[in-house]
Length: 103
Length: 86
Image (cartoon, rainbow over all chains, first blue to last red; front, side, top):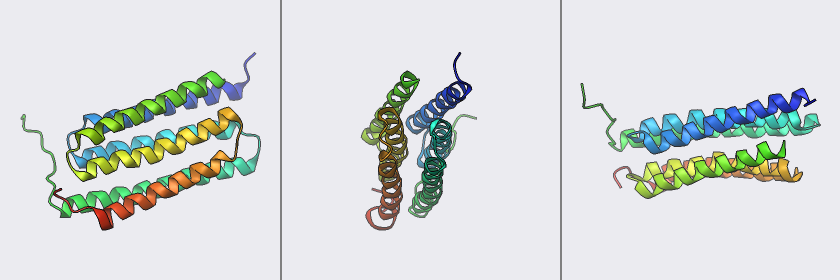
């Protein structure tokens, strides 16, 4: 009999692997800086959140849980800030927004 | 259960490999910086996972430092190092 915690955390890890891969494929495949920012700063942070939740389920102490979620919150704030900064610098620096040429 | 964690570390290394491809292609400095931001997130996740696999919970502090450095690096890049167009 497999414990329920193991089943739930395995599902969370698989989902987080999917989101990490989706973010990286977006980084490789998308056409310009803005769309790549969108793929990177959303999908990857969701993947990290799912992974942190899976690890928090497996950890025994509330202290570890608090620390794991503190790390995730820091990454969330940092990526929101740096996403804005990079997009703003690219926009004022004159990098064109991609448009689909095909009708 | 450890097998799942080890598979996850392989997936994360795969994402880092994809980001290296983006660094090689460019085309602007900002695209390369995005790969570096992905290293920050993936590196944090990888350190947390390896800490769980090996039972060394001190690695959580290291993950915290990775997250902090990624933030500082992005701000420094935008404010000091990069002019759009190169």
